[in-house]
Image (cartoon, rainbow over all chains, first blue to last red; front, side, top):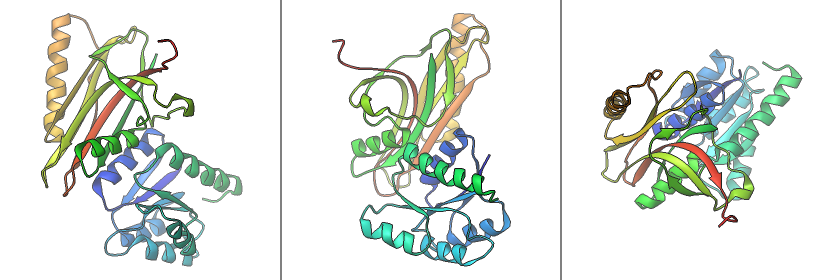
Length: 128
Length: 158
């Protein structure tokens, strides 16, 4: 099953996202800040990243910039997770390299549908 | 019947808002919930999964066994859990729904309650299963939920 990296500093959100993704059969790796997220994306075989944008130490914006600047990680789809629902945030997320955007609290059926679209594309392209 | 086990945690400006946020995470925020007691009918299968609400079921009744815990004191935790056992032969079984201040206390309460209920019935059940969710209050009311969803029903028949 695909290996999903969840980068989220809020323990409550992290627990719920991990739980729901495991229920759906995904393997899950977790990070609580952007530094950990970048390191895990480089050291593990990650198929997709769920990135909270408001993390400490290194936020999701900068972590995504670094991931998309690196040849070894730029192919990994990044779905931004943010509490803000304004359209400027969607533009900002896409501008730093995020591939998609989802607001919190997370609508899991909608998030899973977005994830499956990216994972299906990656599977067809043979990316791993 | 397939019974879905889902869970959610949420926070909000009031306890009800936190409850609604947790319902949303659990995927059942647009139903009118009808709490059931504790019996799993024969032939039931239980699945832990993300509950998906069909778009045409807004406002329907939804029959559930629900564990719910709210907390509004900063630094305190809210834990909710559902436990169950089923007979291996036909799937009939028992639910319990508990809540408390820690994961361990909820798990222990689930085990103690189910052991007592099984003993009083004198039947042979399978191992105890649990789903427990929790969260910590950080300035705003929080709510933790675990819900066993039986089935929905519309209003047209009334």
